[in-house]
Length: 315
Picture (cartoon, rainbow, N blue to C red):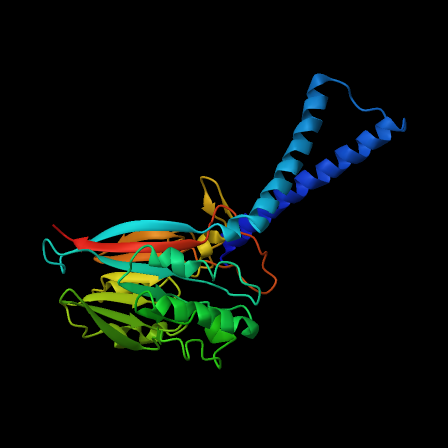
């Protein structure tokens, strides 16, 4: 976590804590007032202040309930369009569905619904940019999802930081038909245009140059990597599209401000969405699931995201 992120989190938590300490004080003093033990200021301003503290506390409870019970189960479909001179004029768009950070748990959330949501977008390719499971017990749910996705379109995956740190010995794609990219490239031809998909597991950024050097310049190239942090290095290799995740869009974000924490060395610069760096498009997906371990199992202003990237001719 960057120092600026730590400061934002501490400030956010301090404000929340202050509201509930004040609300508890107001509630206790109001009770004591009714019992005749204390006398509360009766001015209009004092009454208004007490009401506002209680309203803020109640609003906080509503927001926490929404973030726990509603938003994690409310997926959004984001559609973006990027232009490429590698598509000949008049050719049909190439449609890529990008998902990330499923963080599957043994108790399913959206896994059963995702294939139908994705199939409705009629993708040519499906890509997943890492962080598959929060525990080994969730591996069957992840594999079942992949099996269903492969029936929709060719599906490619890379490992995220959870997958490489904790589940390196678990084969997450065995028997699914999905292709895990571990420093390899795959080629799919779509209407006579070769689409080259390259991918690396999280933590292998030193292998980027080796993987991307010498790629055919006329192929449309997609690079899959969990972190968005390598965008400036990747852009130097002429990659057309870089798909990443990891940030969760903050997972807990604030209206009009966005993510408090991204765990990116760039902070909020590439927190979520579509970016252009030199001739490379970067899409940072907010992810589907929620961080495992002791992290709060809530999403707020960062809905689970399925991204549809439509590649269209430059003119």
